[in-house]
Image (cartoon, rainbow, N blue to C red; front, side, top):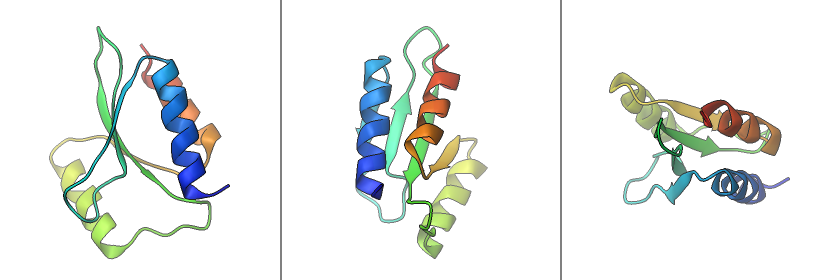
Length: 92
């Protein structure tokens, strides 16, 4: 499965579960998507999508490290199943 297809399927699944999903743009190296779970929890996290063979670039590693340093939750997802598990875990 391609990275784009993994991302598409996870985003569609999240939206079916009432998550707010947006593409993170404007800065190179940032994770692909921002997710906010439905109320009342409204938990925010980021996902960087890769194929199982995909490798994070140095810039992506740096941005993820900086986000985590600020307390952000960042996942790296390489399968639909992995993304689905995260969505279900955050759907409180």
